[in-house]
Length: 82
Image (cartoon, rainbow, N blue to C red):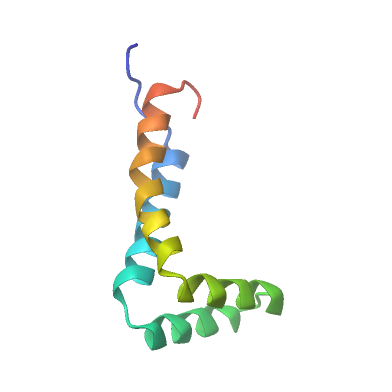
């Protein structure tokens, strides 16, 4: 199998996953909640805000996001069109 360069969309999604995982894993909980509430003030529905707050409280989700970023890049390299 010859690896291909991943598409730019794949790279951007991987970077967003990485940044979200780092923020959730290493920032104190209060700062993450304040950041989510500030983003929600921009016009997110309240249901999404509640889901994001629940996700921020779950450390396993943070580590999952950190693991998903490089896996997405590997998949983008091996699967054509991803």
